[in-house]
Image (cartoon, rainbow, N blue to C red; front, side):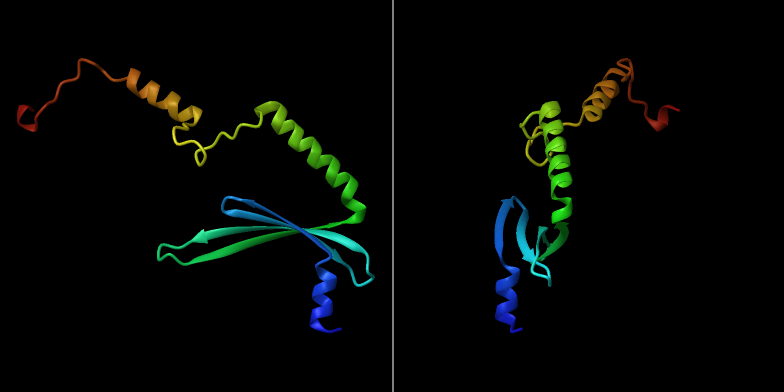
Length: 126
């Protein structure tokens, strides 16, 4: 089989989701027996200090016999997250004033534990 024919066969149907430094590729591909399956590829861009960059990719192969269970679990998991945390994004990356709970608790504890009667002592005083 010529290379062009193989590429045509592999690229049956595709969608791309760009999400910041990540890009997700959803592709319908064909097996040797001409049955279809899906690949989901996550590509993440990493920038080096010198300005050059590279991509790391992770791929999932999803076959027809697993579609129903995969779809059901994905729906259950996304519903769980949205029902418990809503759609608002809460993260260090997306909110400049984001503080983790333990960070704010720790700074409050540290501040309240400071002895207000503390005075500076010079080594000469000892």
